[in-house]
Image 1 (tube, rainbow, N blue to C red):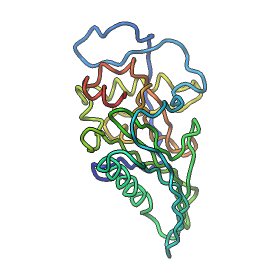
Image 2: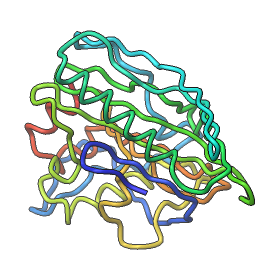
Image 3: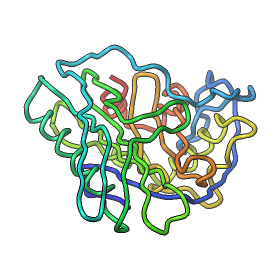
Length: 256
């Protein structure tokens, strides 16, 4: 499930796969096609996990608001990432997008429950970044329903350019999206531990990168995987390996 342009919301338990490659990222691309810088070292169990949050670089304060609601068809007990202070237009855009994300995740089968959830790397709902030019956050829940075999993790992400108070869409931040998806997929798979999932079994595209947030260290993508792997598998791709895929102005915003 995916929402409007303000947010990325995805739900699922699909097994995906692909391949990885690598060098240390020191050399520049030798082709005019977009490429991701690669690595040769085998990733360890923490490889790809997002680094600890960098100090805030903007005038906003990050909070989480408990949401506990009961309707005839759904019990909700989650925390909602929100912003306080700073520019009102940015704050309102972010907060309303997060509320819309929760509304989207609350849909579906009747007689269910929506709870806060945790993914690999300890990823939970929170404001992930308050940068000089960007704010971002992730909403992670699990959804159970009558007759369902197991809870299903769900995710929504919000990324707002603080200069325009508008959402940032990943395809528009890339120099050439059609060429970039494959390079990003290869870089991501190379960061997965040996006993981790294969992220792609098909040609990667925009839908595979629908849930993402930026940070000074890199781009974190929540890849859909099998339920046994947690439904979503976060991988942070360091900017120094993928920067050549991005428009320079967009990169400056996202990495701030």
